[in-house]
Image 1 (cartoon, protein in one colour):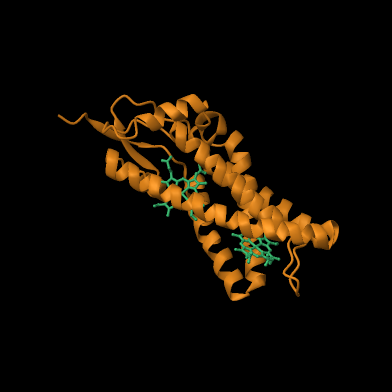
Image 2: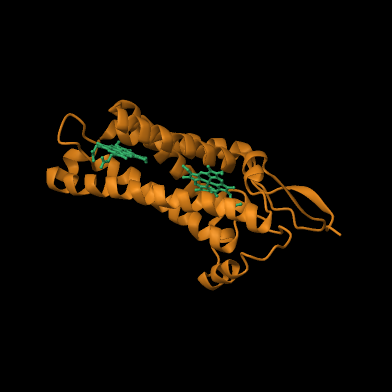
Length: 220
Ligand code: HEM
Ligand code: HEM
């Protein structure tokens, strides 16, 4: 008989909004570059930087399930988790699992490298990132190449990420997508509810992140 479950909010709204905003903005960054709409490319890049600053702070002061200390477990724990991947067992995960946590960190780092190199990039034409004159043409050319290569790495990571989510659905019958949309997961009765931070705190942190990016761009 199936174990009784009850709905528990595992993801706060700010983390979910962060996720789907990154998905949209990454698409916008790719589309705008491929169409030569560089003003939009820069704008979506700046928003991604503000979101990453927010997520960095939220990883320390946000809800329990969004904190790095909560989801970055030892590599051994990650391997142990992967070894059980084929087992069909009830979903008891409150937040990212031990392997997923490292994938999340990797994706955040790749996004940061993408935005950071973009700031220094140039296209041998009219388009130069705001840090171009600080790094000079030689470094900028090199960082532009990293910007291109890193985007391929992001595409590979996203593909693996989506395959992993599909894998959980098929192999384990765990629906991870719905919780990333609604925040709620059906977990066994008696599961510990995670401590969720107040949404207004996220608004303050995001406003500060936007102000930091805006001020930096004015100074540059
Ligand atoms: C551009 C594409 C994407 C990127 C860059 C991306 C990135 C991320 C990141 C950074 C997280 C961690 C969230 C956090 O803790 O802040 C995450 C989690 C998650 N993403 Fe994505 N994502 C992408 C597309 C998708 C898509 C298309 C789906 C749905 C099929 C999806 C489903 C999920 C789910 C379910 C989680 C939570 C996994 C868990 O339960 O541990 N993502 N993603
Ligand atoms: C973080 C999200 C970003 C994504 C996904 C992204 C993606 C891309 C891609 C795919 C290219 C084409 C690379 C190539 O053809 O080899 C490109 C070029 C470029 N991007 Fe970004 N970019 C991002 C952020 C930024 C930012 C924040 C800036 C500057 C403010 C920027 C400035 C540029 C410039 C100047 C180029 C032309 C250089 C070149 O052709 O290599 N990008 N970007």
